[in-house]
Image (tube, rainbow, N blue to C red; front, side, top):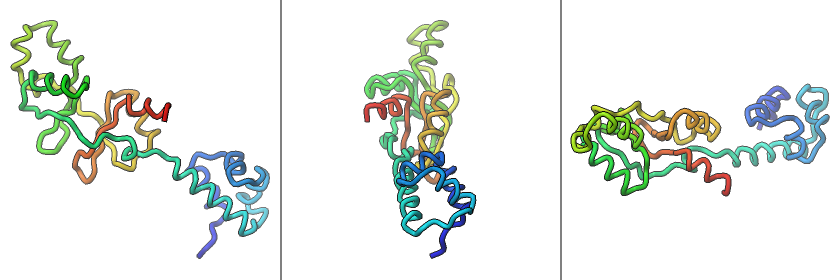
Length: 185
């Protein structure tokens, strides 16, 4: 086994978004010792390195990934379905929007907001028979199952949901509600 260089230890700490003080606290050592190790001024004891590695492992386990919070049952409609079908599906499952997926590929989205905007100009009976492709919005952004929560959170600031794709297949989705639920873990 090759021991990491001081530069590699610093790089790993930064990758995990830890300050020297955070790492020192988690490893049970002083912040100046972490600074000296990273600068190469001191060769740490093996026991100190073990404490640092254990702290790194703890932080890595704390990372929340898309696969940890996603819904695996993806409720979706096809662009060829009627708006009436989409409304019934959203009502049944309690969703305000659903992805539009054709042949496994996300092609758009349909939401209560979009439907209501169309209702301002047309009769409800005409809208219910429209095809989703005629009024769908943009597709939700996609991430892999190993995408971290901070990335997903930024995407959800501008989108109502994020789809999780694995090898090109939609395997789940994450909504703003899923992220907010983490507060009461």
